[in-house]
Amino acid sequence: MGTIKLKNIRTFSYHGCLIEESKIGSDYRVDLEIKTDLRKSSVSDLLKDTVDYVLLNQIVVAEMAIRSQLLEHVAHRIIKRIFSEVPAVSRIILAVSKINPPIGGDVESVTIEMEEYRS
Image (cartoon, rainbow, N blue to C red; front, top):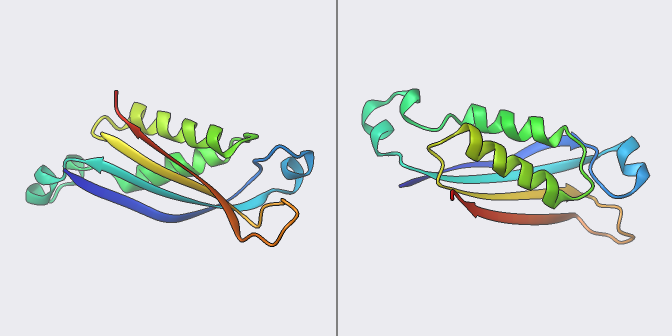
């Protein structure tokens, strides 16, 4: 097995429970870690034998563009889509962070993290 990590994927999205958040948006950071078998690609040196991290990034960016009230909801959509489109992925750890959340305090970010295994 092996691990592929995409760290600090930055998006500007419109998630949140407040009406204002749907209008003004906010900065987000996504960290994605997937488990897959890297043995074949380590020998073949061919993209077709591994998980294409360009595709993983595209999935994250596309799903982050769809408004959700909760970070948990958008994270669940990202996980489901990766499992659906990338059969070689066996486990996903995903963190979605809202930068400077409007929570009435000096908070750098709020992060939710989810871990799922292929069933």
